[in-house]
Length: 218
Ligand code: DX5
Ligand code: ZN
Image (spheres, helix red, strand yellow):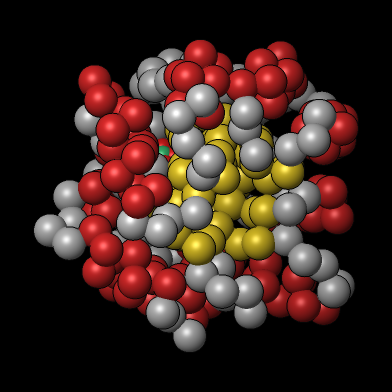
């Protein structure tokens, strides 16, 4: 299995001083940064737009893991790729051409991710697994940080890990929502290699220790 990667979610950072928080995170040796994009329709909340991503890009060398929680992903692929996203993840649930959008993400030079909500079956992501670099199994209903981890999602992670191995595919498996050092261990045992953490990481008394605990999981 791939080494564990921590992708701190800046939804939980101080939005009036994002650049400072991002620099602090980068200084710890984190490699990825999770940036949640919400449109107030697909999820009942609003967060950041392409300009936030572009402005952070000019101040950071982190790998930008951009999670689009929006109704019309196809219309926003270009702005986020231009803004400097390294990975763009899109949900299966809205009505749009998922395959064509994933293809376009890669044409624009970014990695492509597919996301399934807690109520969405792995079957819905199956047609796209050969087109993606990452599959994100949401461990909360998307929209807000600070929610509790939903353990039944681990069955889907095991299913994805099994498919990955049996078909010799190489996508990473990510979880997002309610991840702390304890829930991360459960996820790791199920086959997860990429861990989004917002609240638990940004509120950790010792962020370096949090990072080390994630990175040192077998
Ligand atoms: C939720 C977002 C998450 C969120 C996770 O819709 O996709 O990335 O920031 O926050 P925590 O880690 O606080 O559950
Ligand atoms: Zn997210």
